[in-house]
Image 1 (cartoon, rainbow, N blue to C red):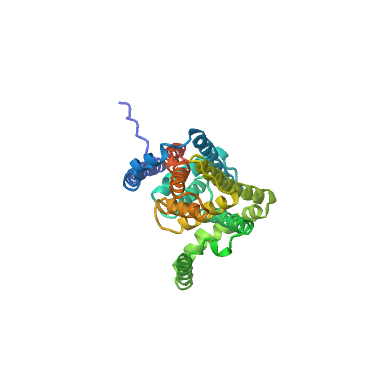
Image 2 (image 1 turned 60 degrees about the horizontal axis):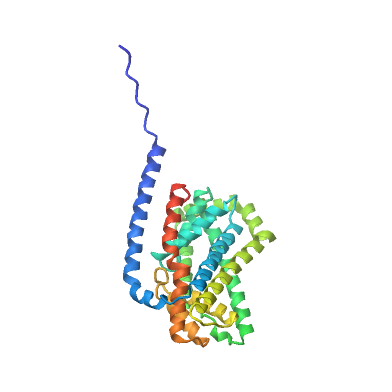
Length: 326
């Protein structure tokens, strides 16, 4: 009798990939439910429609067109510090996907984690990926700080009008860093893990990271990308005001955009819902925009730059998952 063929042993890697894909689908499904819940609970669609139904369609189209610029700028700023070859189209999808994940996480934490996840899927060590995302955020803060200082000087406003430093958040971060340092100092096993998973990857990637931060082309691309983000948001705000027959000096609108974003970012609310709209409204009224128009323009700005992106970001995240990119 011929011998029966022995079945091939199951591939443990394939089983692990299948389990990871299942977990990813479950997480995406749960995130989708949470996002829909937040939309229903936090957005008064009837009031929103009442305020936006008289929007000038031409200026609405202009606002939608300019809303693309911050996405492209974010992708360029991220690409500037990314090691290896990163497809620009794919990293643009990642920046779109951050709009969805930021809806369900406070202070843009989900977007930062998604960027780290994307780099690790490109075989970048976790420690290096975190460093790259940190570089991107640091450059964003520096460019924003310089921009708002210049704008306040040009507008003739006092520096006290600038957003205040969130000292409580700074103190919490400093406390966490100090606790981690003490833990590493007195816990040998933790110190060994730190050396293996953080120090060693940094040593291996050191030359490439040094090349990134000393490359004039990369630094220029980062600055241009972050400026494009700010200019894009200012253009959207200008179009949003024009949609309700209002206008304001571009310098003051830039101060409102940058200051409002900084203030909203310090509030631990998923997606900055409520905080961002309030900061924009208060900023617009402070530069002498009619209150009713200021509220409508602030809502339109948020619809164009955030709410519309949420379903687009969900689609982008699904596409990235199918490409095994995140």
